[in-house]
Amino acid sequence: MQELLQQYGPTFGPIIQFLLLMCSGVGIPLGEDIINIPAGILVAKGDMEFWPVLIAAYVGVCGGDILWFFIVSRWGARLLHIKWFKRFLHPRRLLQAKYRIDRSGVWVIVLARFIPASRTTVITMAGMLHLPLWKFTLATMSCVLITAPIQVGAGWLIGREFATQSTYNLIQWSIGGVLLVVVILVGHVLWRRGRRHGRRPKRAKVAWLRSFRAGSSK
Image 1 (cartoon, rainbow, N blue to C red):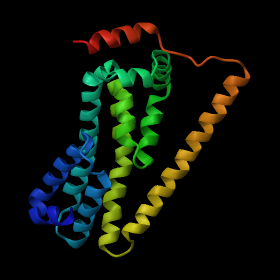
Image 2: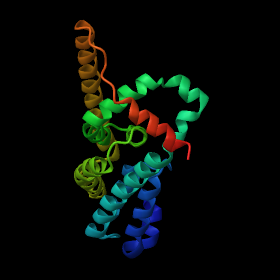
Image 3: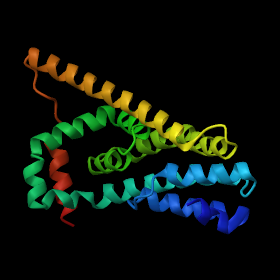
């Protein structure tokens, strides 16, 4: 990746970086750190300029994620008409998931940005369950204001030999692991509390599921 960006230099390197990030957002298996960290390394070496790289990192990640969210929101409903998917996700569970994504969807998107390997799955789920676009956009653009500079900055530190790639990976996975454990524990506590009080999981209105199915058959 570093050689590819270096080949196009300070003028076209950020454009290639942006295009790769857009591809990463729509399902091509290229993690954003795999693109942004090498760009940061090239900034440290003087082969690319800082601000174009940072802007490409921010706009590329946000643009790719929002595009994928829109695609799934518009056409993802067709998955529900696949037989194996219907067996996996009962309409009752779908309505329960819809209720939760309406109430806590923004926080789910925020957490997914900091838990490695969860971004695409969570975006797909949020899109299928029709999380409002403005909520998704706000959460994504706010989080990427943090993650994009961190990734470019990590690359700069690696390029200056103040840090190593393995150190960054260790920190990233450690933070993600801690957040994942916290999410699991909180979810378990809430589930146990609900069972203790005999509460049924809340659901979204059935009208949403009917319109969802009608829209997916078009």
